[in-house]
Length: 299
Image (cartoon, rainbow, N blue to C red; front, side, top):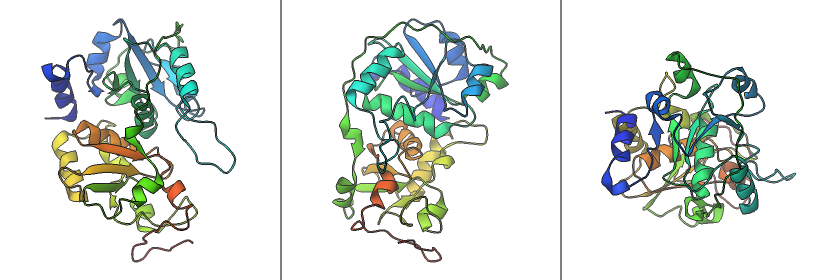
């Protein structure tokens, strides 16, 4: 059974009440485009805005998580940090999000991890159970020859006030204090070259001690859809994730890791994001890093 099939089953399970499925199909979205309370976003940035302008799913707004769902970058500060409550409140209301909204996010141009980053931030804002990701994104929608438009929707202001959930976010000190905790599994979502220390985007190369490797792009198949449940469960197990452990994901700046976090959440695992990720960890000279044999440490 695929992740999507499981999601649909979970969505109608009485135990979850009105909770929305984490993943929806193109068919589901086509059937619900005119639902009251549906708010749809195409995820992108300044480079991919042209894709939205050329044709998007009817009713979809454009959402740039790097600007609209992030704190303003301070010179010398960390990239892609969570926004302040006032900024979240302003953006969500401007986007038409209210207490009864069901939000569907979809990728375009293979912006898979920006989409999961948007999902993460919206859950942080208290919208858990009301956010879904469209499996396959815009490409799957277009492949099935479903309608697109270049009309930008007129949005009425929403009424939702964020209620933050800081428990899904951890910092470097939290991680450092739990490096030897057998109940915590730290997952490095970067490519193996960064995990091994052969390459780096940060001030130092290597990885957090004890971290296991599970690259973010292995969560998605060649068609741009999530891999099936059995496959990702096996991937997590082979990476060294122990049953019952809390998962903490990290990457370069806290974007790629949200895709692994999302799948972990989907599998029912307890998971949090190290938002500062390796940009934060490597900047602390007293925080240890590990470089595999063959890597070229940068110090």
